[in-house]
Length: 236
Image (cartoon, rainbow, N blue to C red; front, side, top):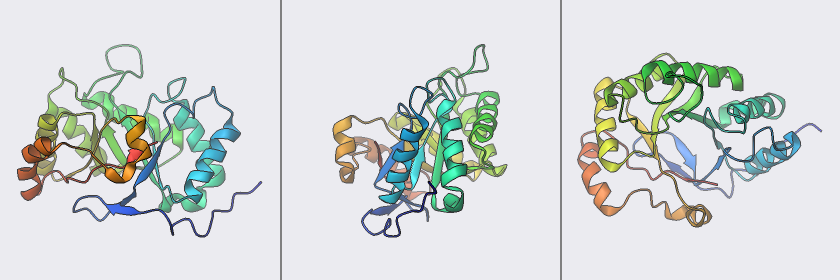
């Protein structure tokens, strides 16, 4: 059955601007971690995505190793995107990440330029996209210089393969460092995605991304044009 989007989908969902960026994101995003792998029926996945969009959820959040198996969430999402949402691509924020293990061997995990940019190319092929809206470093890698990791995010944006750069699960101190590096490169840090418990996902309007102490450490960078202190919407 051909999908026809709900015409009133934008009437109830609040959208918030990301810091000083022009981009607005819904207060609730849909994460595709556990229910979009090959162990779930494709029609169930399709129904979830349709319902989310009909309710005003415009941000679909993935990662290279979401599944199971790894990569399958992006493949399945890409198929549904082509079949159901092709006419709505410019109404969607599609994000993906790299940092955790994806491939065997020394080049399939971490924060190196080789891994991040190769992973992004693989993600784009799996989803059938020319670009993602946000590309994240999925985790801080202590074995890779942070300037190399941020340089890879900057390269992804400059190559047109991502519109914005983000980080996930970084400490407040590493967030400040990452924001400074990206600012100096000319690709500001859009967003820091933090892992939350289910209770927070059920009350997304609180958006408790950083503690007051953490915000105090990052605030000088925001004043100087660095990290945008928008508290990332819950991923349910």
